[in-house]
Image (cartoon, rainbow, N blue to C red; front, side):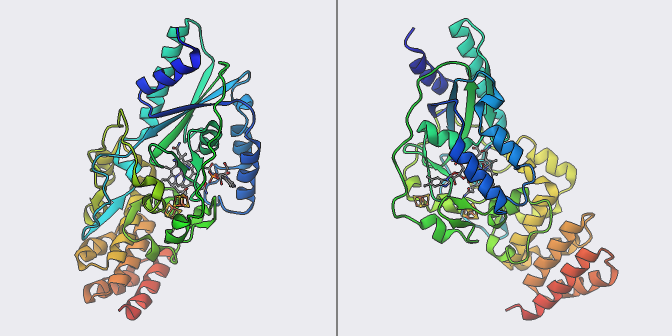
Length: 381
Ligand code: B12
Ligand code: SF4
Ligand code: SF4
């Protein structure tokens, strides 16, 4: 058999990955320190699970797999052939590219498992291995950068020569002794496009994203109220944000995946969803439609909050009827964000509905939103 390392590289591609590199199993000390600094500076606020003990554990492969000797870093592109710039349509909200394919965690874990089982068969010996993608404790980007799979962009995304940043990252931590690859010498140079074009100023300095200012966090992870100051900046984005990647020159030429993750039919290649349809969905309709996609992460209430914000930003009267119905939704969060949107649209029906809702609403948070929306409607252009 050819040497083990080249076999692994070829076999990983056969198993459905686009990129594969190896790094050693020593600690990711500087990345651990950077992540701890980020937590202490409050720049990971809103993600309580991203805590000190997780970072310490995840930055030491020995803690995860005693006896680990190598980390096989894997990359899978999610760029689709129809992933041209999304065409924002009236009454439509935009879904980030990674969610236009089925939930990548499932696909990547399935492929990683097959990869490890295949290695065991070839080597005819059990291989100690653990595999992670996104939801594991490892710092996925740190591993990718140290293995030379890609390099850190100032947006904090890992950029790759062949597939740009449209690449999802996973690792197999193993006791196999493999020669490590070297980190790339590439950098962003003097480019600062992502920092300048981020609508919320979330890239507060090169290589530092402030979680709470990032639209991706606000539209996917935030389980509470979207801060008022953020809402107008979110535009039509209803799940994730690709702006810092869309503007990145490294992404101008990016190869497509060899074995793409299946498209999420319920989202579509352009990632444009009807906002009124989303807002009118029942829990059952939401589950039936989005099961198996990344959208489930936001939950129905999250997606409906986001749809309200996008309708408010659209300032399109087409949303008024469904927003008025949402003032009666079971969840205060949906009622509150619907009120904000009606205040932005500010046509007569919207204002009357807000005044009526104020008379009957008993939830203190929603009352606050309605009162602010009525004030806002008086200042609307
Ligand atoms: C938490 C998280 C988020 C949070 C980010 C909060 C934050 N500030 O990190 C939110 C919800 C906002 C988010 C958004 C997105 N995410 Co996310 N996320 C994660 C997760 C779970 C942890 C990230 C993390 O460790 N953050 C901690 C900070 C400290 O790490 P960092 O930002 O990478 O910082 C490093 C650099 O700053 C570097 N560094 C520090 N100083 C310097 C100086 C120099 C000169 C250099 C070179 C480097 C450097 O050291 C730090 C530590 O390694 C990872 C999965 C995982 N398990 O790793 C996915 C992950 C990072 N996300 C991913 C994706 C795809 C996204 C989105 C594109 C999704 C979208 N379209 O909406 C956006 C991108 C936003 C952005 N610009 O980063 C991918 C990234 C793939 C890639 N090519 O990079 C990952 C790896 C998931 C995966 N397995 O594929 N995400
Ligand atoms: S994902 Fe969007 S909001 Fe977050 S850093 Fe990138 S451009 Fe800014
Ligand atoms: S836009 Fe420019 S600065 Fe930002 S990640 Fe891409 S190359 Fe780097």
